[in-house]
Image (tube, rainbow, N blue to C red):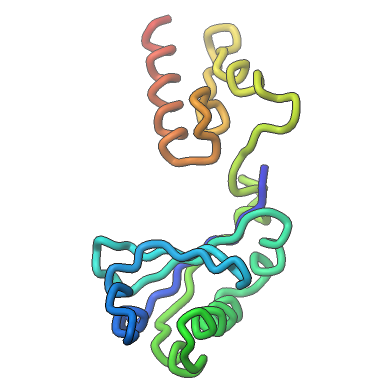
Length: 168
């Protein structure tokens, strides 16, 4: 399993949408700020929601994943202020809340997404094989189309497992 810190910030208004001279920020959907922490951001565009989601994966994510939502929200507001070249306080006063879940520390999950380790290209296919026609496996880690770690792979694998059960 890989570690990830993903969180969503809910704001009173879309402060990034009215940032002159960038009128196109009204349609901001994805942002990659390689030198920031976290570097990856997205909005619900084309929906006009007041939320923005931050994401970082891999070893660097543990520094953020260990933060409580309030501290994570403050840090994220400071990062967004740097990205949009505005005062941190202006961003923080718009923040309504920070919502996150630490998948790495969840005893039922212990990670955020799967990935294929070196030498493990056949592992996903092997996990699609039922045990004694009584135990069937599904989940994004069993996807054989190369979309490991995605929601659509999890859904597709559930459909595959259901077909296997119906065909027994």
